[in-house]
Length: 150
Image (tube, rainbow, N blue to C red; front, top):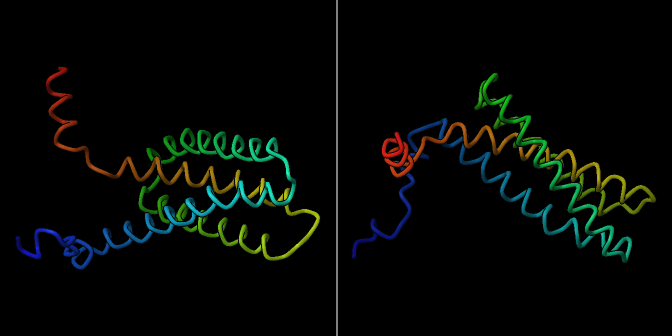
């Protein structure tokens, strides 16, 4: 077995500026959104000792994602998708930074800030994911299925 068969091909990232930008944005969103999805319930439970609050903040994230998906579909059709992906990625990263700063600075409004960050970050993530899937070309299997159905 050759090394080239088991190592990821990075030539698209070296040759295409657009692909590099997409890769960086996707990495930022995955890391930021992943940290928020894990850290928010832990932080809310530590602040409130309430499973109900954890459930409510998770519900707020889910509703915000669904709203972001709906809005993102319209925006992806009407705007430049690359700009939309970039701006939503930056917004999700800023949401994560605000959440981190909020966790580091004790205050009475921590829970309110967490809810705002979850709602705004969730909407931005939904918008970005919708624009991202609109950019990705369909796989060959999806194309063959649509031809078979017609």
